[in-house]
Length: 365
Image (cartoon, rainbow, N blue to C red; front, side):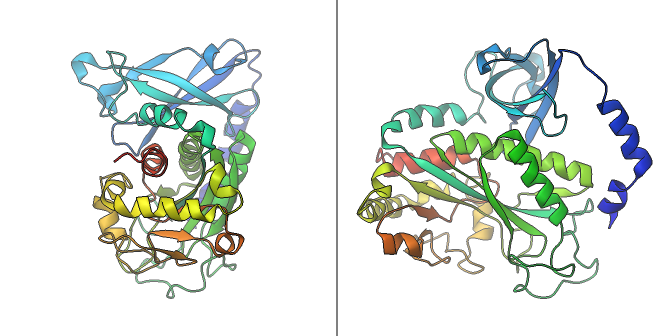
């Protein structure tokens, strides 16, 4: 495979490693990461700081050319980066850092793609209820020509069935990438809960959380950045397209949610109350559950391939064809969490989690 050939180019890799081992003294490289104007692409640039920051407030506000990221006009292009969390850099290692940032316009107001600001304000209203989120990020690996990794260049692999959590060279495509990403997330300090191969060949999933409040969304965005960087090294593309091929399983970002009440004795009653509220606001959720205000989920939520219909809300126990699933163990224990299966793989988790809070806890439309 082409990505393995590139990886094993010893001259190229040894030359790179030579430069990466230079002593940099007390200097630290910090990569500022942000969401661009598309609402789904990630950008990053790096600056030098003179000492290890002890807290996020010690990292300076920075700026960039917003006209080149669909966030400003060229005549008024400076856009601001406000660091909001720090993680270890798994690519430069050592003392070097990654920082996720919010974006602000020239007038110091949040940019249109900065949904974190609104999400944070909403989460602050309900922290006493201890909202926990976990998100299952599905993704597809592609060759640089856009063809699914490991698939025959002419035709299709064997039908779906042997690939989910499978093993074997004829079934698993990209395990080295998945495991590299997993280790990078653990090194950085991201709360990654696990990973597995998915139903479509060359499709994988990892889970972020559970995290309280806004934390799961911060770490999901950062984990996406890390995934794209890992794929650079393997010369492979990570696609978050929710439905890359019409006759195969799509990719979602199933979102698990609970509150303190749901996790306590007889919490199932609270789960059922929230599901009723979700059923009444189905259209509002669909509008924010993918990167194109519902247009991507029209392709994915067809009622087949382990999805519900986009046109109708449904719920059930252990049913992966529902909009919202109650896990069987939760039904037996009568407490726990529910899984909203509607969010697409390319969703903005800030918008998804905020909408769930508004509907379930604040009862806002």
